[in-house]
Amino acid sequence: MDSLIVQALNGLASASSLFLVAAGLTVIFGVSRIVNFAHGSLYMLGAYLGWTLTSRGPLAELGGFFGFWGGVLLAALATGLIGAAIEFLLLRRIYRAPELFQLLATFAVVLVVQDITLLIWGPQDLLGPRAPLLRGATEILGLRFPRYELFLICVGPVMLGLLWLLFHRTRFGILLRAATQDREMVAALGVDQRRLFTSVFALGSALAGLAGALQLPREAVNLHMDMFVIVVIGGLGSLGGAFLAALLIGELHAFGILVFPRITLVLAFLVMAAVLVLRPHGLLGRKPSGLLPAAVPSPPLPRTPRWLVQAGAVALVLLVVLPPFLGDYALSVMADMAMMVLFAASLHLIMGPGGMASFGHAAYFGAGAYGAALLAKHFAAPMEVGLVFAPFAAGIVGLVFGWFCVRLSGVYSAMLTLAFAQIAWSTAFQWVEVTGGDNGILGVWPSEWARGKLVFWYLALALCGLGVLLLRQLLFAPFGMALRAQRDSPLRAEAIGIDTLRVRWVGFAIAAAAAGMAGALFAYGKGSVFPSFLGIPRSVDALVMVLLGGVQTVLGPLLGAVAYSGLQEQLVRISDLWRLVLGLAILALVLFFPGGLAGALRRREDDRA
Image (cartoon, rainbow, N blue to C red; front, side):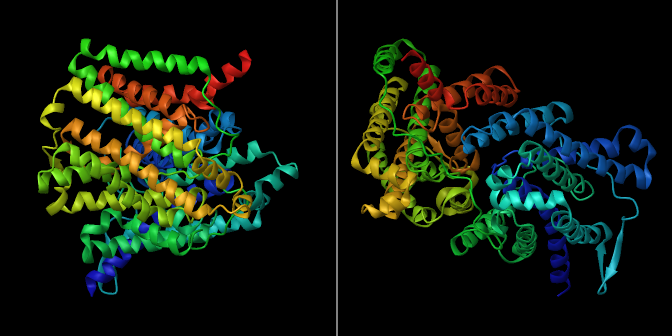
């Protein structure tokens, strides 16, 4: 009984930290509709800045109460200023770009912040000072419990009360709540949205920084601190929902370690999946006006210009003729690029024409890879059988996950795909008896005739090229027209007899099958499969490739996959700070080519005409 009480109190302390991060993100998310991937980085920055201010410099020399708490507050304020600078210098310049394109900008910020943090503070974990006046433990119900944890338990409700007063008793709060419900009407009333957005980013970032700085006495500061899903569980724009979700996750984690220790890695995503299936807009959320769409409706997909077709034909000839004169490393890199092209094209099918963003597309990439690998490991199946089975396995997973995902829209649908992907990742990571767990499945080699790098390159080129061609033909077939119709006007599509739900579901499964083929080829190319194939970074890679190339064109994902994977490959070879350089390169593209690489080519063609 005593251990249960202690675990419950630990869960409440963790819930307060979760709430501070979620409160900042729900304010930003609710008002600006921006999926701010960099919010976890701001939480991390708050922890590092707090460590510096409380352990180095004048405040550290001052010591005591003012030295520690002054450092915590200054860290929160500094993080708020950094968030305001990100909005002012970057996001403000691309508000007219497709909204999901802003996600690409925040992802670039994550890369830049991570390497800058690594440069300044190094890779080692940093231990912060203990909080003055809150050291030691006190007795509660006959049990000794850390005083600082009790302090954190109080912080959450106090901050909730202060934020409630801010949002309901001040003009600024009324504007924030109004913008959360209908920001177009707020703009029509003459409110300066730019100033409002900057202040919102400053407030949300400061809350994230405060949460990070308050972690100093509890845990070591490191480069992997991140949080995101609480705001989605609670409901966009709902502080009460964020608080309730934080309590739920905090307590489930506390008791999950005792009852189901193997599911703690994915517990938050299990809860998120259950909540979104049962309550599509979160625990206390309501469907807001103008919710961030999964993809921006665009004109009918244009046919590829003749000069570009000719350039593609020349490139294809070079890809066939030149490889015999290249080394094994170049052939391996080119094969990986071909697989990434198919992977990106599969996501584009549902994200562009389908209007459904997916934050968990790696689930199907990994399903294809594991499908082929498990056949090779347990049944000694050759590569040919694995390549046939992989897209079917991934397609079945896509049918199961898609049945739930296509019933939601916007960010809620995208976050449900992320939850399912994390569940799949956890299964691969912890089902050691079947998948090998973190050790993966080794010895997944091609058949004898395809062992050579040159032959495998031609195999990858043929299968990935065929897959991309089939996807492209599908886009201009009646099914592709129906897919775009349900994206642009679901009511009109249903009125003319299109079963919009079934069209989205089938499109989801087809995209999953294509991603599974890419994953199986990737597995045979590497000779092994690991849980990272299903991880969030792999999903983000696919998302970035599509957005970088341009979601509104057929050519976009192809260009984005080649540019992103090629640039990443070269930067990893020449610099330890490849994330910084890659992030800056993506930011440059975001600022100067807001329609993506293919969008820039399209504008050039229009200018010529």
